Amino acid sequence: MSTPPGQRPPAAPAPIDDVGEFLVHALELEHESAAHYEQLADSMEVHHNHEVAALFRRLAQLSDEHATSIGERARGVALPRIAPWEFKWNCPGGGPEGGDCLHGDVSYQMSAVQALELALHNETRGHAFYAHTASDSDDAEVRELAAEMSAEEAEHLKLLEDLLAQEHHRDDAPLEDLDPPHMPA
Amino acid sequence: MDASAIPTLNAKDYKSDIKPVWCPGCGHFGVLSALTKALAYLGLAKQDVALISGIGCSSRLPAYVNSYGFHGVHGRALALASGLKAARPDLTVIAAGGDGDGFSIGGNHFLHACRRNMDLTYVVMDNEVYGMTKGQASPTTQPDWNHSKLTPHGTGVRRFQPAAIALAAGASFVARGFAGDPNGLSHLLTQAIEHPGFGFVQVLSPCQTFRPEQKHWKQMVHPCQLGPTHDAARAAELIQRDDGMALGILYAEQLPIYSSTHDAHASLDLIEAEFEL
Image 1 (cartoon, rainbow over the protein chains, first blue to last red):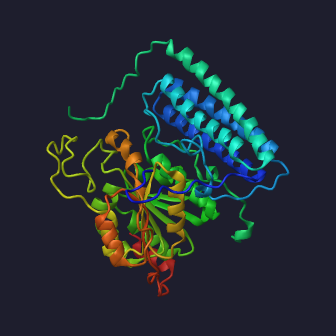
Image 2: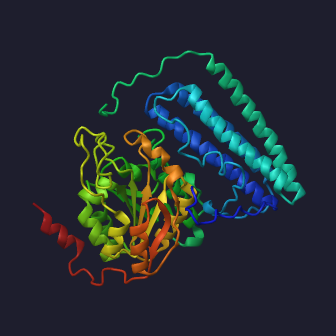
Image 3: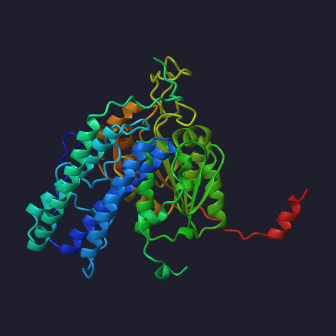
């Protein structure tokens, strides 16, 4: 969101210095991500783009697995309730993996490459959030946990980059649209 | 149901099993996300929420939310919602739809719902186009938009100003949100639902297919400069001066709420008997 002329940009949120608060952020990030990929997979299925639907479904599963493992770490930790608009997504790019719901060339005709590029954008932001918290927090335990999760996100990024490299070698024709929108030239 | 007995629900619990048929990339997904987050934050039991809509892409929303819902006829979401609220004031009633449904076909209902000030929420997903019928100009479309075969030279008609008209018609809560910011929008929706009276939220919700240029809204939206105000004259000035992209609560005031003050004089059986053929 842009800042109107003459207005100061909003102040950056305070760092996350509590383990419970950090885990709630991590859980939200992964749940948002899984929900976003599930929604994209559903959309692609509805519009008969089954290959990309399967890809998004797989990405959703990865996020779900990550959320489950964070949930296990959160066992026994007091988790605060945070309103959706009060999360401290204080990192370059801002926002959790799925928050930027209008990013990218999302369309029913999107290719696997475009889907992977979108996922890469999302996971990069997730990685940035963890890396930022790992360096920004005043709490040693939060820093350690965030660094661990940042390393896990880096693995996801590597996986996506490898998949993207494989897909770039394919030379698929774009999906044919039998009922395109009627727009004058 | 006793509020303390309601299990904690998250946004996902308010999503139904029906897969949206909206185009991938449609802004309405952000509205669905924001609404389910708001319902979860408010801890509303699913059976205590009713989502009422008219016709159009955005009016499919009730199918995708796991609450009571009614997908009504074109432009009549507010008429249905008002009737339901009068009969069941205990329910949280949310009307939803698009700019064509709400401001053209249902324009008259909009005016009178604003001035009646029943305790309900109206969410208009404004993409400045009739999307379901493949891209015609709507009341909020720019006069020179010529990308439809129906209006090859544009409509030449000034745009309908939803916030200004809602305020002039007597709405007690007027806000504008952006579908690309589901978390910020969930905050506005939460406040609109909690507001005692008619809460109107105009949501800038880009149409990926027929208005692809709206992708740039993300760079154009900005926070409302003056913030929420209880002063209608100040709000009117703010709304007239703004570029239509200012987000936040533009006006909020406690005004008398319309509610049914008379008990029914006839039983339901008697009324039904009168309708028998």
